[in-house]
Image (cartoon, rainbow, N blue to C red; front, side):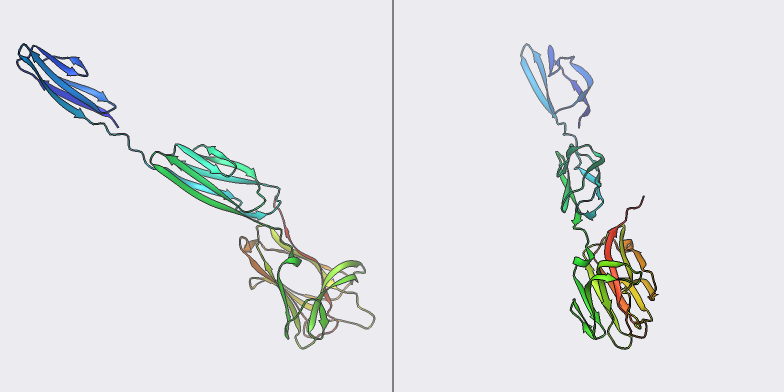
Length: 306
């Protein structure tokens, strides 16, 4: 990368001495020079009988350039839902780079920093590239974008004590269907409810296992639950309701027939970042009667924290 070099010479019997590229010099001397590039020195001794020449080449190596380094590259959030009204923060840090680019949509950037971009409509892979004369380094990170999780649209398997059952049938084996214009125990009518009936046998139950494609931070399972309004002389001793995610019970309670409905609100955030299985189970509470238990607007909602 350059530096000092010391030249020393001594010439006898010369009338003139030239040191190229410096010019005429004394017959004997020592000089220190600062060199920034490779230089050839030629010492020429001259007298009346002729001249003699000697040459020395001093090689200056180019400065050593380390390859670029990628110290950090992240995208926050790394998963989300189509149509989210939020920004994506991209952060990066590099070293030894002459040119740094982030694609798509950003282009050339400084050695380190942050940028906010609009939330994309689909999965997007962001690429950080750092270059210099010693090479190129690349790192990628992907933002996964999922459609909104609509609970009643995801794959679900219903079962009772007798095994798997089809949706839309009600009978002695239990059943599940969408009931229309339903009068509930609170005296109000609802246009559509998801009605679940345990199998008509000892310790009968019905359960639905929903395959959620993704759980995000802030996702909650929510539903209004209760019984159809029973006709005269009909009765129920209540039902047991258990809700679990990936086999972990989040809710277990006995619901009895009364003139009000109940609200269920469960935070699913502990399961964020991955697909999950949500299981809704209704049991006959030890005695099957008119256990016509209904779910009003069972759904997955994303709750924003302040």
